[in-house]
Length: 110
Picture (cartoon, rainbow, N blue to C red):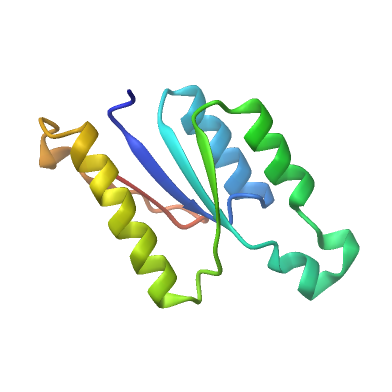
């Protein structure tokens, strides 16, 4: 099981999907959050489901979570679920390795 996991918001978009692909190739378990809101804002040409499906098919260590990041309760619930998964699989993982990445796509990992 992978010792590192990553939560990427906007995972079906251009930058988010590239972040998912990069970290997946590095062996990370990638959890992507996206609700395809681009299709609501921009119509059919903004739809990113094709990219979500591509990630699910091509990345064996990618899991999509259908969630609107404005849903605070939903986001907090997902984070708690992922913390549980992380702690169960990484109980010997040194907490000093927890960091934040500053980049244009919201990314955090444990």
